[in-house]
Amino acid sequence: MKHVAQQIIAQKLKQLTVDDLLHYSQKYKIKITRGEAKQIVSALKKSNENPFDPKGRKRMLNNLAAITSNDTARSVNQLLIKLAKEHGVEHWLQ
Image (cartoon, rainbow, N blue to C red; front, side, top):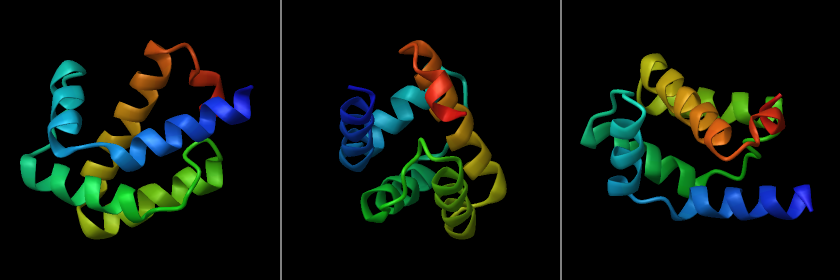
């Protein structure tokens, strides 16, 4: 069941909109500009990395840092962790 849930979440990341990302960033008080959100959403749609695999998440975040900034990549990681905690699956990110 865990694998199926992770696939669903990965698919949701690919369907994330700029407005969705900005909503979550405001909700969790993580600063992301609209321009950064556009770049992040575009990169997530193209990414095949598994955010639940530590190496895959690191590659994904490194790719985001390359197109935005290290601070933005860290913000995305914080957002991912907070969303996982909210849904009780933060242990999947270990």
